[in-house]
Length: 89
Image 1: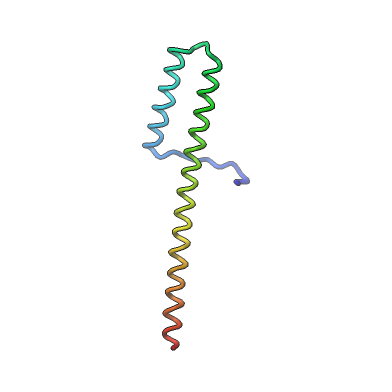
Image 2: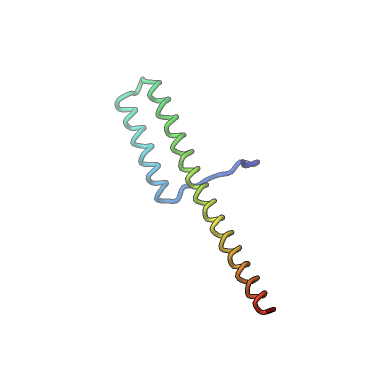
């Protein structure tokens, strides 16, 4: 877990999709359920969950990239060690 606050940022295309989704939800609520506090609360919770899910997917993607880089680095080191050993023989 993060010890300090961390800001996650959407890429531009994802930000546009998120804005459109949220604006559409707000417009729908205002036009159809202006006085329904239950539905407004439910929609707000759903918006938060969408953000959390997007951040989990981003974290998983970043973790996969790090693991791939580590594996490639380890493979390169193993190849170098193998070539050093074959030179000694």
